[in-house]
Image (cartoon, rainbow, N blue to C red):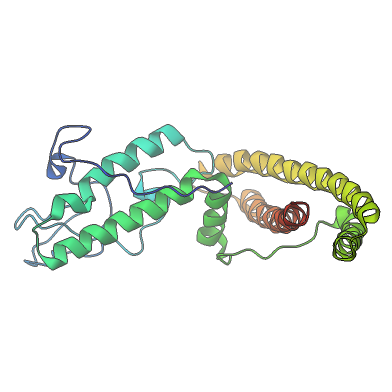
Length: 254
């Protein structure tokens, strides 16, 4: 479901018609409490008020905060896109041509952070995977796990795949066609499972968002939050396995 979003090329004065410094200065946490150039105190500005040098974003900045969004799983993608292009204009390297090496480096680093944050939050699966890393310390790549309810079907699928590949290598068109039909049927089963997993994830998004709205959780709500995180991780693990199987079938049936 993920898509690659290239950094937009924005010409000077595009969009708002304003230079980048004219956009609000106090929006993102920064990496330092003082300017890297003149050591003046800074309080969240994009640019130092004294020397007007661009400031680096905080390495601890999470992607949700980056766009001024709450840590929820259902987000306004139109708002996300608007904010992304606004911030891209602020930090775009085109605005820092002729500046110092440090300013160009900060511009590139800030743009890279924004680009990665946008790609992650735009995609629902990448978004929930990222949330799990923030909230539960989950690994970046969640390992695949075969869905228990498809265990027998998966074993049969693997057997049919081996039969199909063997028949093709031996030039046995009849056996290959028969095994291919069984694999196409299995693919429909996997696609249905993927849809079911994603539908359940969407339900859990709503549950998570309601819990995230609460400032303080009681014992029951805390348990519900932990349970929701665990179930989402388990679903993603099964989805990873299903997606890998679908890819294997796609490659075999080409």
